[in-house]
Image 1 (tube, helix red, strand yellow):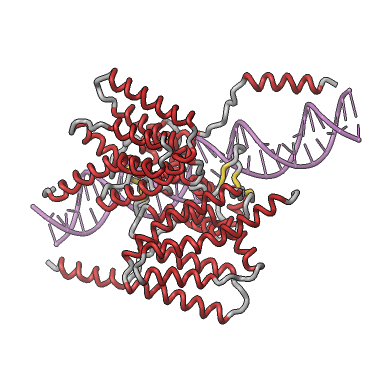
Image 2 (image 1 turned 90 degrees about the vertical axis):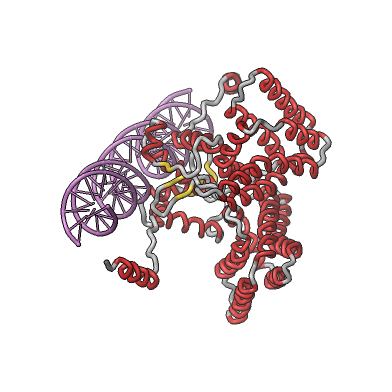
Length: 243
Length: 243
DNA sequence: TCAAAGCAAGTGTGATCACAAATCAAAAAT
DNA sequence: ATTTTTGATTTGTGATCACACTTGCTTTGA
């Protein structure tokens, strides 16, 4: 019986091949909408229709409506009583609410990560920061989309080290909800002359390197508070104007 | 022109009629599955099929599959790589993870509520506790389902006072995730002779009445920790046994 | 001139069908 | 006797259709 030999051969093959995976259309639609939402490609109050999105994504309505339903349950989108769906509007209360929740949960996540990250992982984060600087130095034109993507990678690379399968989806949900708001602030930022975001990230990494959970939490809160505070001021002064 | 008169008449009618609302089948299915999940009617590792649930709920597959998709995104259910769906298994890490997240977020919610609850709202909570005691005194037979429902009302009545539209859905998601685990613990509880749950709730209310946020948070954490700790011990000793 | 009624295009929801993948059981081969 | 193969059934996914509700515009009436 050559059973062992066959088994071994299969293992050899398995080691060389990468699993192809079976991604459904619905998953792709969902991911795409997530990406758009976090990246702020949709603006607050924008209405979304199933058929419109289906056309834009070149599929039928079925995957879209299920993806929309999922996004509605995580409050990334809003279902109006008319059964139409829009990206939620920005209000002052919502901004404060989101910032508080994010500070609480992402703060906890980074505090956990601070005690668990291996030197290997910290080095990886630092390397990411280095690449980022280079990129920024090379191209003078600000690529906001790329900036946002890198920022997202930086944060989630850290959060993933917190070792909590419960907290991370909640953080993703929070990013989904604050995406449209944040983008508004980012645009305003880039007009108002860029503040040194790299500084904030470096102090986060420094705290992580020292395994100082409290310092990491504070540095993180300072980092994520900036766009919210900016947006808050902007909204407040706009609210006073007679619109 | 009798415009004003017509308007007045319409208002009179509107005052007497209650809005009928338009609840979709999908919403009802979703609510029903939520209820079942939080109440622990499904046990961990149980497999769920679209057609099976559709038959049980007497609808077609369409509303069920969308409801399942929504529950999967909030981690209340788990999508296996085979694309079949089951209620997530209980593991030691998951128990600790859920308890930590719940302590963090529900603790924050109750701390906020402690500073915001009006005497009117506190009285309402106390009344609820009173009714509860009466009910418990009247019927000697323990009605676990009723207990669980009342416990849920008690907690969410408080959380709703925290004034955060972001935190509350997260708490609901956490209850959804811990529902199946908790129920296992509750059953074990009722076998092992009931501990005085009323005592924990009373100390929560006392802290709220004093507007002592920190005390409220601690009392709450003590309350929700119990079933988790119980379950944890149970699982640990079972893990040692040769199953 | 302006408000109300009526009509048409658009939209979400649910049901049904077709298809591919997975599962399970019986039969065949070693 | 154990493993492999084969075939039947079940299951999830996506497309399409029918229906009801909404919306916006046109037409009609005062």
